[in-house]
Image (cartoon, rainbow, N blue to C red; front, side, top):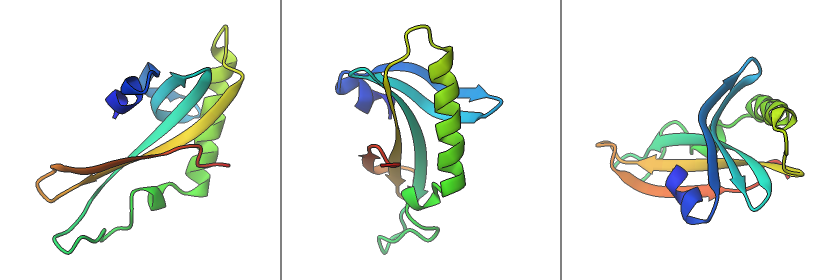
Length: 111
């Protein structure tokens, strides 16, 4: 997942960043933007369906609020914080054998 951001020129700041406000799966700086990435993995069955819903569907409004608060706290703690921030959701789709089928990055899911 982090490699997709690195290939796009982003800098990985932290993985599994924990704070009293919550966890950020991946913290990235991309073109002057501080990005919190929520990584969600789901298994697609043989019929091509998601028995438990798509990865992005599991990112609920309360989870987005916790991510936003965590991201703001991180931004406030950085000496030279980027002016803008965003939250991305990385959808990782695997088969029953945990083989990667698809990786999609949904950018700026709160706007």
